[in-house]
Image 1 (cartoon, rainbow over the protein chains, first blue to last red):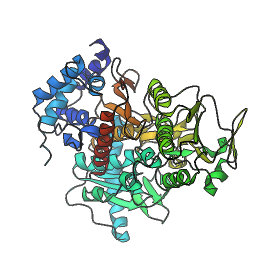
Image 2: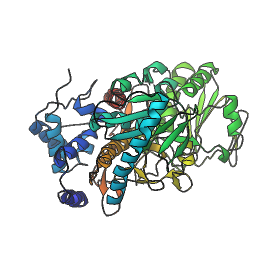
Image 3: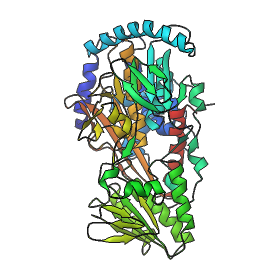
Image 4: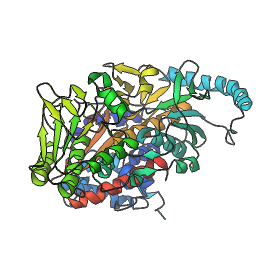
Length: 105
Length: 427
């Protein structure tokens, strides 16, 4: 996890910022991070076509899938490469955000 | 940061009072009920601008968002190489802006002729003035036509097409390919990096070669690259060239286009005659970036503060997408423009509310390229903001390219397009 040091250091400074009005900083951070997934997985995780929807998926399931992509336990075309670009804490925030979204109709 | 925040809030109060009368006189649409947190004008309805407008509405609550775009509808550059190869129709890559309107974005079809950063207003060709608290521009690229002799005239005549902005030029180039007799020569020229969509010219060579292989097998395709080697997914493209198009597609590195004369592409030491000549011209930030004084890197690109995407040249104006001076290893792609837009949308909303911006933004890129009508390769990267260097940096050990071309990734590529179009257009 050493590659993460700059990001983690920056993340740590986040808590030093004054509290945001609404919603909580973590929620906004989760929202912003999850939006980086939307190009493929749909806005708020409501995917179309052959992409896997993430909206409404339990957070633990998303966290576990990402871990399996990283380890290679879950074969992938691209997610094993993308999963390694986010820290554990970032994945936790992303997963919490998607879990709270309504699934696509 | 703090200074810019307080001045933002103050200016808004002042302009709000000043503009209320002006808007009423002009008979403009009523402002939405409840207190607006501010007015944002977005110029350019491509991957960057449309996404910014959509996400400002999605995330901003009562933020007044106006999107100015010169075209009536959106035509996607990604997937347009499939139209050139005859694998998709132009309608498949075209979308309406109506869904953005339904999402609460005010749409103005028009041409921006001036940005007055001091007065914080945008002037359109028809005389309309749009006041803003924050301006977001996503002007894409324009061409450095003076770098290639005869190119401007050749493009004007229609004899040479760039098709590097999807739409009529895409259809015109497709028509030339269809009209070309079997046994003809197609030449595609690639400018030196940086240019929009690094893998795009190589994908284009593949989809056009796939068409020729099936419809005009005696033809030849010359890929004339000003760069010393393939600039993206090198090994994968080289494998595709030899596996699928041996004897048909010829790749020539270090072949910079110097002049266009009729159907002849003049290189440094050689003239290449082509029945269809497709020139991808050298590029710079779009004209709007230049006229607004946003171009401050190499006389070519717009520098930005990466936490907010705010211009390093003109405060209050945020720049997205291909027009920006790229962070290290960050490609000029529609996907990245979409990601820039989300960083900007989040930051603009917080700036309008006088709140600190997210100090740890992340963006990521995925570019799928078709090497046949259905086999696809990708390149992906994740970019985390580095507070020490004030820029985005790729995460070591992350990202990469396909192990091999596959039809599975072909299906993902098309789904990627559906999802990103919906993400940007709220459709």
